[in-house]
Each structure stands twice: as C-alpha cells, then as structure tokens.
Amino acid sequence: MGKNKLKRFAVNAQRRNVVEPGKEIFEKIKGNWNNFFDNKNEIILELGCGRGEYTTGLASLFPQKNYIGVDIKGARIWKGSCVAEENNLTNAAFLRIRMYELENFFAEGEANEIWITFPDPRPVDKHEKHRLTYPRYIDSYLKILKPGGILHLKTDNLQLHEYTLSVMENYKDRIKSIVHTEDLYNSPMLSDHYGIQTTYERRFLMENALINYLKVEFN
Image (cartoon, rainbow, N blue to C red; front, side, top):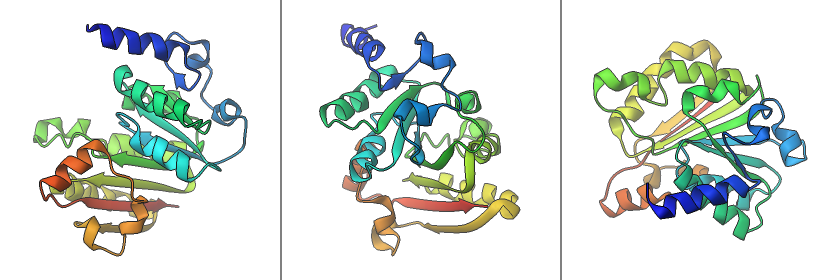
C-alpha cells in the first residue's frame, strides 16, 4: 500500500465528516443521521461517490440539506472530505461501506434522495447482480427512501441506462413518475443535474460521449 494512501487513511480516521469502521459512531449511525448533522434537514445520498463531486457540489448549492457520499474506497473519500473541510461544508459527510450494506446504516425512510453518478456499468451479463440498479439494490433504496423519494442515475453507458429502465418495469406500482433522456446536454432535463460534472463525466464529454440521465420518483 502506498504511503499516500496510508496518510489519507490516517486523516480520515481523525475527520468527523468521515464515518468508517473503527469509529464508535460507525455502529450507531443507523437512524441517527439527523443527530449527526444536528438538524432535521433532508438527507441525500451519493452512492459510489468516488471523490464526492456530487456530495460536495450539492452541499455547496443547497446548505439547507444534508449530503452523504457512500463508497468503499477510503483514499477517494479523503478527497471529498478535504473539499468539504476546506469549504466549511458542515452539511456534507462520507460513509465508507460497500453498497450492499446500506440497510445496516440507514433506517427505513431515513433518506430523501439518491444519486448514482457514473457507476461501473458491469456490462458482462454474469456480473448483472453487481450493477447498482440491480433489483436487489433497488429494493434496498426503496426501504431507506421516504415516500416521494427520488433516484437519479447519470451514466455514459447506454446499456446500463436501458437496463435500468427495464428493471423499473418491475416497480410500476411503486413509481409516481419517471423521466429519462439519452442525451442530457441536449434535453429539457439539463438543469436537473445542477451543472455538476464528475471527473469521469468531463472525460466522457471530451470524447463526445452522450450522457444518459434517469430520474425516478417513488410513491
């Protein structure tokens, strides 16, 4: 393991805005996120957050809401944590877990909104169960989202976009509305992403890739 990673892990261990194994709060955070933020504001998650561009970007735009970036990569979370610290974003935090553990760290109806931005599309069929819009994950999202909760997906991968739409067919009774586009930057939905771009997104745009976007509001 590189020295830089070790240094970043050491910083994470001291940061209040990073909730991870080894910290007392890690085992007690489920159902207590509003206490963690010391307010009763809405809670929005960025899953597979990487460097946390959406977590910190949205936290800056909407200080009246709480944002939590979720990822297993501590060295990446460190970057988002630094940005939050440097900009005094007390409404931004990071949780280091694997995605299948979500229900162990969020109570039923504790979240208002979920963002999934440029996840690994897992294009091989045998890896379908690892896609973040696989039914097992959607079931978890529905448990931790409040009624009226929203799921966003941004991806350059058309296959994942279409796959997610097909999965949503199984949740028709839970869906209040669904809108989507295969070309976000040439659609009326452009403002829905608040102008925030991840590192991957900027790279894809330089390659003239189309950005797919999906927004689902659940009952």
